[in-house]
Image (tube, rainbow, N blue to C red; front, side, top):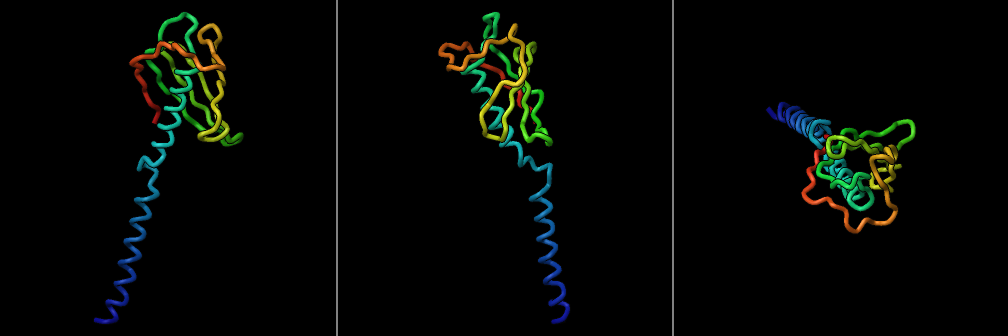
Length: 130
């Protein structure tokens, strides 16, 4: 009986540690979600402060359609669709780094290096990329 306890106790502890490790490192637990959501919120703030539509219409909807890392360069790329019509992409060298516009049409967007004081972006619908 004592030998059985000596064998079962370490096996039980090992099983608990293995199950805990599987749960902790499971890619489907959503552990990346807060980083991605936070970065998307930073992009929304950047749009609010630096981007306007050329036609003067207010921005009512921002939908994130791409959020990925380029493994060769290490840069991150986020693409948004504004008002279900216009696409604009942003890049960062690292998560939390400086946001730069990467691809957009100057016929659709005006970008300002200074903060836009009266950007008409009330009640904006945001669709996050997960």
